[in-house]
Length: 128
Image (cartoon, rainbow, N blue to C red):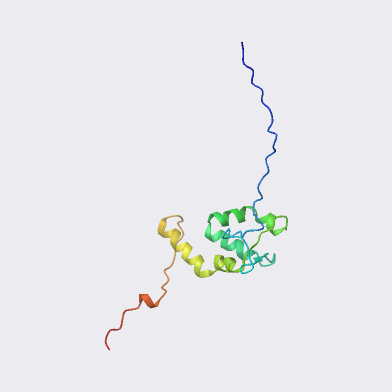
């Protein structure tokens, strides 16, 4: 007796998840709230976000760059917290990220050193 195998289609069609959820920040992944409302990018200024994505080369940036043309033409909508975008595109944070990548060997680009003085890095003045 030969066994028959019948291949049937799944009754439940697969639903593809959207690339970017509109109820969460595309940069940090946290949901929006009254304290942290959503911001939709101004398409005339979005190129600075893509420039930061190109420089960072992290998971978030690569996902955004992969959909760059769709985001620019408006067929894909992204939303983020205002402070997340400001931190993500900040020159200081971009510099730190580049230095971190050089330190860990993730990229071969050269990086100039920057010095940041904080109170904890200053010598104690104990001569009173």
